[in-house]
Image (cartoon, rainbow, N blue to C red; front, top):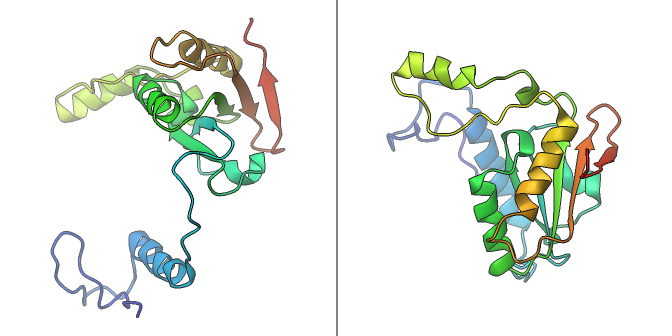
Length: 187
């Protein structure tokens, strides 16, 4: 039985939210999940991707990776972050994906109109000025999409933690046409 917005608990309090008739975005997501779960049947899948591929892409909401790549549930591992940049945490996820869950191929996807094209490392300094502490991570902003895809491919291909580094390909997804453009790893 779905909970109405006026009956749902206030986040973090465990108390009913009777003063606000409008559901939050999270309330809507939880309600959608209840509907999804009502018709859900366990597909009996393993955690190992059927196609043995890991896709690393930007977190941008305009990228529907499964639709754009013709993928079904269970086909791949999808690893996303701001920019789709290969960072230490992406290498961590790829290492687990390959060593524990059997993936062998890596597909890297950046995209046109990425927000990281407009940022610089000054972003970290601005945060430090605001909160009094500089974030320990790099922004990983870039000016050249193709070159950043090449850099990400190189980071995967040279990681000593990844046993499968021969099938690594990089692409730029055009958010206006939906097409992928493959990037030559050589400049």
